[in-house]
Amino acid sequence: MNLNLITQKFTKLFPGDFSGNRMQRQTPDVMFCAIKPADFNNIELIDFNENLSIEIALGNFDNEKDFLAAQNLPENVETYATAYVGHQFGNWAGQLGDGRAIYAGEVINGNKQTEIQWKGAGATPYSRNADGRAVLRSSIREYLMSEAMFHLGVPTTRALSLSKTGEDVIRDIQYSGNPQKEQGAVVVRTAESFLRFGHFELLSARKQNDLLKQLADYTIENFFPEVSSENNSTKYINWFQAICDRTLKMIIDWYRVGFVHGVMNTDNMSVLGLTIDYGPYSMMDGYDLEFTPNTTDLPGRRYAFGKQGQIAHWNLATLANAIFPLISDAEVLEKILDHFGKQFWTKHDKMLADKFGFDEVLAEDEKFFTEWQQMMQDLNLDYTLFFQQLEKPISEIKTDDFKDSFYRNLNENELKKLSEFIEKYQTRKSKNKISEAESLELMSKTNPKFILRNYLLFEAIQDAENGNYEMFFKLKKALENPYENLYPEFNQKRPSKYDNQTGSSQLSCSS
Ligand code: AMP
Ligand code: MG
Image (cartoon, rainbow, N blue to C red; front, side, top):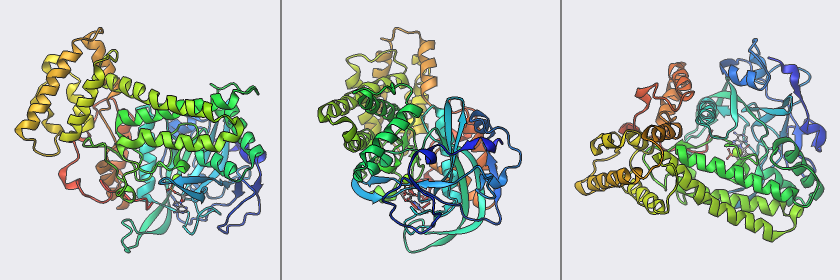
């Protein structure tokens, strides 16, 4: 690997604390703290994502096991953690920051730069009484899911490697007073930038308007080619519009593939519109707008599948408040936010039309989509398998074939509902102006044949914890081609034994 390509751009431009002090603390004047990763004595590299490494100019693996576990770092790598704040579950949470992410710096390749971070490599000043470690379980979840999302075509951070640290880490998965030893692990993750809404909220809350402007300029110049970096009155307005557009694209993609993030706090929202911080997320099995895998969120279901559009809107409004000093025009910001709300439904309908193989959204489709959604909600059909059953020449679609997507026995009335819907679908599809083949092609590009279901991850994790990585590597292969049915054994609904399984259908933030 070309580790000599790693530079420190961000830390040269912005104020930081270079004391190296590990003490967990408020850092009111700076945007980051230089901090060294922890020492691990018995590291083991589990997997390295060579394609990604080549793509970001770090090149082939040449035994950089130490680097990938944040050990014995070359001199050009000056590590640091950044400060950010956030609104968690709707409430101001004050200073958060990289509690267990440590930056190596950026790799600059032409006009593209990629930030490199270890997740789980030790405590930082932002660890807030926690250990800065990550366990194998959550590291496998981040490693595989971020790559699964990439291959599904969803904007996301990525994962370069997975290592075990050789350390035991204590976690109480169910927060039930039963802490247990788990294996420690480190993921190296990459993104053009890990800047979050919370980084901007931080400077705004501190009333550091010059720094806020500087960070916005840096972000626009480096990561928003669609926004002119020329200094004129509309620059920051256009930037906010671009953030809304990118966030919208991401959320619509989440709906397309059935992804539930689980913790859409503003500190977990990338300003670049990337899916970030894979915690208690889940792909949705049975369709349910109220579904959240996050046990911490169960009472309010703030971050349930069906609410993600609304919550993105709320988070964007919070960001608008934070960057208000750069724009000083509440009306224009409100207009952009309003537009997001309207665009959401336009794009959502277009996405559904693609899933159904319709060439365009007709006026009558709003009713069709609403009826479909109600049916899915009532019948709790498997979201992914349902669309695969539709992906056939119209005359070959049979109600009986949908049985594989049932999570319970449907009564006569419910079966009737389903067959009536299929008839309506057939009628609606006959209005297409594109050919059957073109419609099926559109559906096959839109509807995944492989999704990384939580129960699959659960099985891979159980095996990996016992030293068997066969399932892990099989899933890794499967997720690289999610629009092809290469692994029919994975293209199945969740087995009933996993219906109420902690770690499969119920996840906590403990990671
Ligand atoms: P999350 O809910 O995972 O987005 O985390 C919220 C905040 O807690 C962030 O500042 C994280 O860096 C921090 N955090 C979560 N887990 C740990 C941990 N094990 N050690 C240190 N900080 C953590
Ligand atoms: Mg987070």
